[in-house]
Image 1: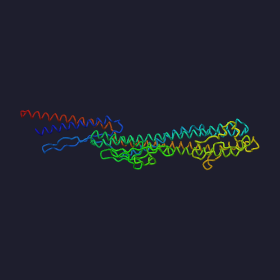
Image 2: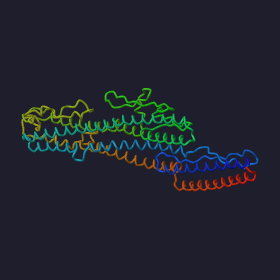
Image 3: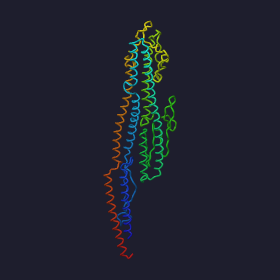
Amino acid sequence: MSGLFGMLGAAARALDAQRFGLDVTGQNIANVNTTGYARRRPLLSEIPPPDRTMAGGGVRIDGIAQARDRFADRRLWTELSGEQREAAVADMLARVEVALGRPGASIDGGLGEFFDAFARLADEPTSATARQEVILQGQSLAAAFRDMTARLTAAQRDADLRVAGAVDQINELAARIASLNTALGNASPTSGEGLHLRDEVRTAVEELSRLVAVEVIERPDGGFDVAVGSGRALVIGGAAWPLAIEPRSGTGLADVVAHDGTLITGELGSGQLGGLIHTRDVLIPSYQAALDELAYSVATEVNALHTAGYDAAGAAGQAFFVPPSGVSGAAGALAVNPALLATGGEALVAASGDPAVPADNATARALAALRDSRVLSGGTATMTDAWSRLVYAVGRDAQASREAARTRGEIVQQVRTLQDSVSGVSLDEEAANLLRFQRAYEANARYFRAIDDALTTLMQMVGV
């Protein structure tokens, strides 16, 4: 009778094991579209027989296993960082492209109108109206340079705000990963709770990799130690080491500082944060430098010709623009000489090349011809060429970033496909498992009934 009772216990355990298999299969099916979920499978093992008179002790539930490909996970995090860097650069440069304006309606248009005004003055060198038009076009051109500087500065500040926002997100995710590490340390690695926590911590690391390139070390309990930059600790076990923001001396832009006070802005070259820093600290300053060089050339070249000519009274011409103190900041400071803006200041506009001949137009013609003079880039580019090169540089960089983001996005999709082939839920496979566990449960239920009937017959025979 003890053998029958042992068989009955084995049958009960088998029913529980098949029920457990159905439970795991149902969990997989329920989470087929859940982001970050990794397919589970039940861990079952044979129970050895207690003695030689029994075939075995049935089956034992050992827990749940999770299907993961660590190589695919790490590759995904790396590629995500690269994709998000390029996407961030492309997004910021799209705003810069808009700020540059349409061809002919931006600084290039202002340059054309300014030199056209001098051409009209050359046609009517004694006209007060033509002189006034030159001043108005000069003011308009200077305002265009100042406005463009303001737009580039606004784009840089926007990127700077997003840098600070990205650092806040990084710190939030670091705290979340540290909390999940602690929870994983207290959970069984093969329990449903433990596997759920592993899904969560991997999802958190993936979100973090979008923001910044990460170096991860998997812990024995399934958690992660995370570092950024040149091995700067961000998460170690249950402790998070948040990054900080420190205003940069002289500009006020946000610099990123590690927990030990080390400046690490230059170490963060990938992820969304890396793209924002690159745009803010490298690309936009290069565009501003080109704009300053153009503005400096406009001011110095126009002033050189204007001071060499003579005004309506035959006096030597004054500087048309306020002389710039240097190339840096020239675009933001460009302005028409206040003396020309005062009442009667139009008489100070120089058109003549001969003080004795007010109707002479040599200076006005020379200034109009400056439009086609190659005075930039070592004598290889006109002012309009220089502006076109700036616009082209922005467009080229934006297009390159968009193409790189698209290429990396395709790689990310390929890695996800590889990851899903291991971790993803296949409804066809789960349907087969569902049928397999269902049939096994039914067979074990019949076995259980057969043992129960045998016990009933035995007890009737012995009169129990």
